[in-house]
Length: 447
Image (cartoon, one colour):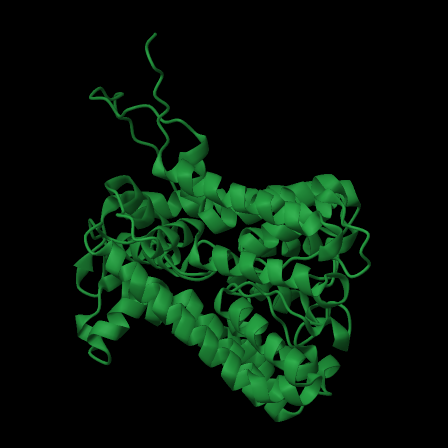
């Protein structure tokens, strides 16, 4: 009998890997030992929490500090770390530790997972990523430890420092601040400079992308030596921090309802709310008190997200940069978009357009459906779906009250947002070969 060979693409491996880890996490969170009441957790709540952790989102149906036991919190922390590093990266790291060789298929999958430009040297690059993550997370925990130890005691303070350092660096948005008030995030630390600055830096480092780290390590301050992608990421990251921060400081937090904030708190809050929505999900102010414009600004930042090959989700800074460069090339009547003295390939422009289309359609569709099913304002539901597909975790407080169908929609959006829109499509849709025949061409007017 002829054997049937099952062909699995690298995109399917990445997607199935995330789904498998989510399933294992949900099984662990269902156990009675995972919750403080010892009665076990509903399977839907466990699946939602596991998905949110693995997809480094931060949307929760139960307050992490007050509902989950130490075991449950540890499971969530491990899931966050796996999700931040990438399931494939973790799997390859385990294989490396056992001393086994990494095959071509594993290297190709790893290349796709971390958005590396080539397969060569990828195993050494993974070693660099693991060391860098360990150093950054431990450093972040050590810096925050004095504040948390003084507030919660030595044992709990050290655990809180490590948990929040992992969560911030992995852009997860999970927090253990429920003791200060359920679902309060870092609102009790609005004026605390050490926590604000450390968490923001961890979010930024995690969202820059592994290849950008490599450029920084190799070229240091010699910006001209950086890859075009790294230059784009750094410039757009700075722009997406500075411009929203200026808006929040001079406009949003200048409104009467924020008169209780001091000038120093306004500075920290403005910077934090510019950094966190891409895509960490922490907040130092009550998000429901933001104006409509402030919430719309946050939605835009959530959809853009971080950079490719990073711990962050969203459409990615490079996607926005490519479309912006393409628009400029049209305005200037140039054949190809350009950036930093380099042409951008046509495939990148097509992919960027496809990604934005996928995200906008799913973000809007999810918001419309949830609004209709739950009878909630559309603005609130769109904020929730942007948070899910951008793997952010910010919410206006409706997550715990949503029905099962609405939660399933958010789960699908979180998975898509973490694995990437095109990866999700390529993994689930079987495409046919290009072939050599083409349809006749005909012009269509746009704009």
